[in-house]
Image (cartoon, rainbow, N blue to C red; front, side, top):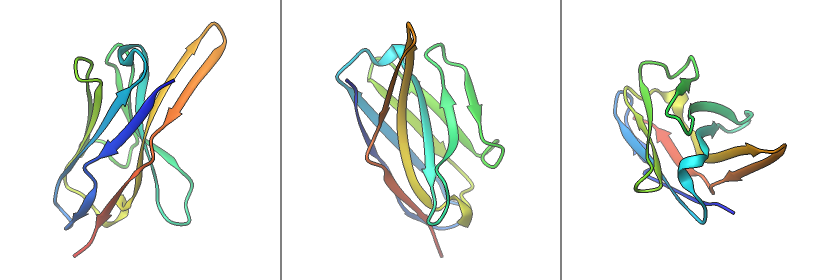
Length: 119
């Protein structure tokens, strides 16, 4: 079992920056692939960025060059640095931990943190 707690959301103007954090507890953090998803009102949840247990990263096209995902296994924390924020980045951001082992999937979600881009 993994518990995930996101923090760092808030209200920021366009062009601004935020750093989201997701603190994990309850299991061995380093073996999980970690991701950030977001869900805007009336839209489906979408993958924003992911980092594997080995440190490989991937990003949604809409955030490439603006967002950076990273992890600190010593602190059991994954981060999402968001720069050059746009109105369309407004959403609830969720942290996800995923692992597949011997055909069994382990999939955990945080409660989400609101990010609002507004003047």
